[in-house]
Image 1 (cartoon, each protein chain N blue to C red):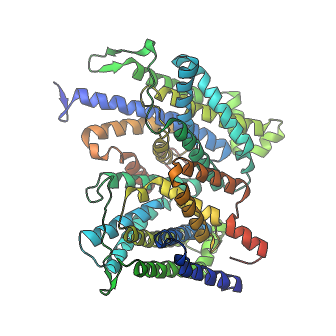
Image 2 (tube, chains in turn blue, purple; image 1 turned 180 degrees about the vertical axis):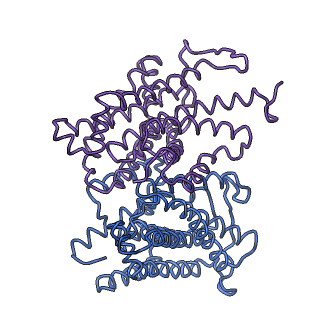
Length: 307
Length: 295
């Protein structure tokens, strides 16, 4: 890990450890869940060059699965989270096998359409509770002795999950696997001619991304004790694209910064209704036209250091 | 009452008609997407918002200026098309050298802005739009009752689709367009103003969406969200058909509308998802789409 990234990692960890002294912890937990979600998404687009416009299906599916497991089956939280994550991984396997068959723009449209199909399924399915969602999900006792209804226990758990997911993404990007993924992004034909089974690499990246998005979704369901249709809707898929784009596509810390900014903005603009959507659209347009490196990408470029 | 497969014919034909109507809109919208994609290599995510704009501009022309349906049909496509050309000149034209995905992201952002602005101004509830008096009422076809307006929508969209196909495939202008799709640099070298052609093509695609919006206004309610979910279905239609062929996207549009209508009769729970399921099957069997060629 280069020194610049070590410093950034230490700063990020320190921020999330100290911030609850001044900021509302539930807000920070939300930010960490979305940051993990955006990191998972960035793994796919930033390093594999695959734009998924349906990532909400993994977040939402895992949320529903974890909430159902915890509330109806009485799973302890660690198993509820694992179960939700496994469901997202399975969904990643099935949708990946279909979506990987098309490239570029078609991949984006396919994932969007698949996610919409999942959305309509959850809208009608009995176990999701339709418009109400699954409410009052018990947080339970982690490993049988840590009571997660205590906000600090919950905060610590979310922090550990977020840091674990973040480091896993970091490790993946910098492994030989991640390097091949980058090669595929830069020039797919050339990677193919060098003997790499391109589709297998893409599939693995897609599944890993789905799994981590699922981890974020299950954790979020326990934090808010709620799984609802919002998390499966296409606008959520758009939001994670926005977070990653704003923070910096293909940067290590970009998605975290992007997620934090977008969540903060939503928090403060919430009472203004449609202005949240409008300002998100404006940020999209500005980022694409004039700011394609994103916040962290620009900082890294200015410091001439990888971030 | 007569029945087919245990379903009353009245219900069957009624749903088939709704399917054909939906199919008309799928065809018009996917046609516009295909025309734009052909030349610009951009998937126009704003298409749904521009369809909604078409309906709203028609509504505003009616309520503020007192202009009727037929005037709207004539005026709305050029008005909304002009805003499209402005977007192309000011924003999209800056992105042609970049990865195609940026075009998708930009148009997605624009769709959010447009839908948000209309929601701020008009709220989320639908606004009524009255049918033109000439097309109210209906006729009895013997086996079913056909409201005149719905018949008009189906015929009009068929004519527009086939007209577009004719212009692109059979005229000199269309041959320039197809040549520019293949190799813009060479066409430019022959003295044709390709950037202007791109602007006009985008404007035309947007005008098609707006026209669809005007035709949809009396059937569906005019609301800011009317295009948002529709465009995702149209994306699935485009993935199923493949964007290589104009005639292909027209056929897929109408065909899927009918399939959706039939699903409502035989298995209503799946009517929202059937197009996506078909997409999954087509992707598994023929990844390039029914009429597409894999590049």
